Image (cartoon, rainbow, N blue to C red; front, side):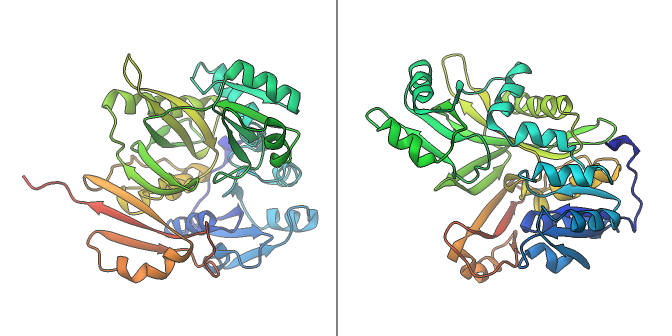
Length: 368
């Protein structure tokens, strides 16, 4: 396994990106601004990231020969999504540095392993239990109570692979509908708001966090992010501290997002960690136009072995709005909004629930 501390790219070197979606596209664009080349590996011939790189590999992740040729053409490898097959990561890791380290994927690809990891750090999460059958689900419900959220341990995103269980529900039916033998039951959290912290960690251990972001979801898909979150300064500092602690404990190199719930209780608000995303994240898109360095450039700097930037927010408030499905057809109305910047991902036709682009809006500081 290669040592991340030995990675030191120079302008003109090449970064390999696994995954060809919008995150890979924006990573490649950030790298280009720094004089670094990118090559994208994706099995989807319509990958939007292919449009912004000179060289691309369209092959399955199980194609060992294609992976080896890809590795030979690049100097370091990263990924835009966390469900990289472990066998593919092993093939690549034997040839080039893979950052963040592929071992981190073993923790973050599995919701139970991730919750156990966070708990061992002394960081709060919702109560949870391992579930492998209807019988163990019933036992978990007795311990955790209802309502609760049942999630597959792997491969869930944007609300997929999960179900809320309430009093009176048919437990056996819920278990069957999830179509898995490996799940986790989590207590339902009556949260005040959802927040996330985008953190970056360099090969030298430097950690930089962006402003805490407040997120609104619709139909389990992120719709709006605002920075900074409307929470007390002390709570924001706690959230950033948690993200930094997680990044350091993972010996992480690159950008990661830590999603959290803010609870309101008798002793004041507190935060619980919901999930870790070991990659650039939708809730960090506001940084493209709303900060002195974007999450994408920060990730490229980290995996290149370069110093991280010190994130400074532009304006009083920055808002990111996802354009989902047919909403992309109204892109022109955003082009005349003062302070707004439109990002269109270059995907094919819109589909319900598909992220087609986003808009960032920077509200300037109040005069005087």
